[in-house]
Image 1 (spheres, one colour):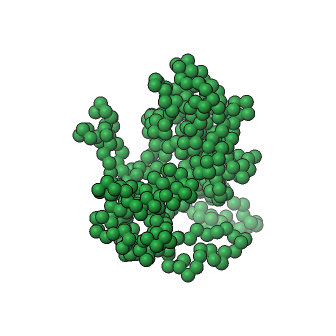
Image 2: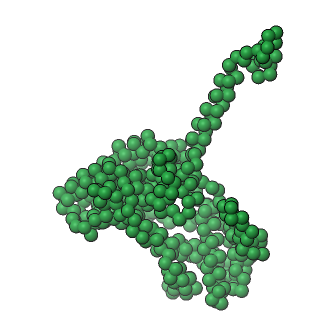
Image 3: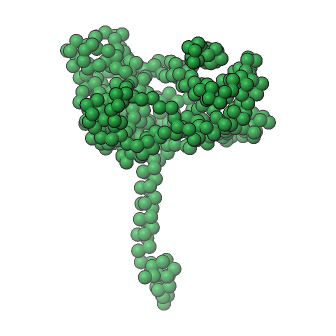
Length: 395
């Protein structure tokens, strides 16, 4: 990270070197750097040096993130004054407003304000940043993002019962309460429509692998031609977190589409070899397929459906399908998904919002049918009119 004079911000650089030594991924370092950049700009605006801040500044920063707009960057297609929501030819429908809910998926578009997840992530990053400098003796004498007051007397779960699961406790005083969300899966009928809208064998093979293996997008896009093994019906991927190599089982259809894609690409002159990229562009010059290109392909396939599913939702769909199979152990699903904690995998056993609503409506319908069923008198001579009043059938 550079300051206004183009010089490296040494406190941030030292912290990032520490994270790099902890074997954190480049994506993690980038996300930490973005939060630190936001903090540095806020400090420059209020005129307080980074090593002279107090919990008062940490509190005001948390309040600012609740009301401030996110920093925006003009897209290169809009820099020539072209109106928002149009393509490069000046055509196209208006872009949905920020915060609007997609009627197909139920997802809300990112708003202009910081989300609670972004606020919580920034609080964690900055508290860890100042913990590092407090330990090395280069920062302020007090962490501006202290722990919650209920945690100051001791460690979290100090009196934990080993027979019960650990409770989630707020670690930071200014950390927001994040809602618990159930992973969204793509319904089978919508997935079939999206799959039918694909134009190329490469895209069909990609979606078939994503939805059957549960691999992350980058894990599959980094594959080489030696990774898939059609004979054993598995594909080798490099895990995002640990960097370990793991074999993932895939559906037979995925290997059929893969073979069709490879034969078509090789006829066009695509590079062939065990160490060559497995997924490449469709036109010359052949280059490895990037995540941005795959995301654009998936978005184009959803235009007719007017949905906004993401590639990561394919991983959620694969996990839900496997978790709903009564003949597949939940620990097997955990291993395939690469989850460290079984609690993360068990989220896919919870019903979705649509399923809960359908079950509740069916319950109300059964109650209505029971109220309409005539009840026999308990004994001879009993007035049935009394039962009608008792069960609410009096009209």
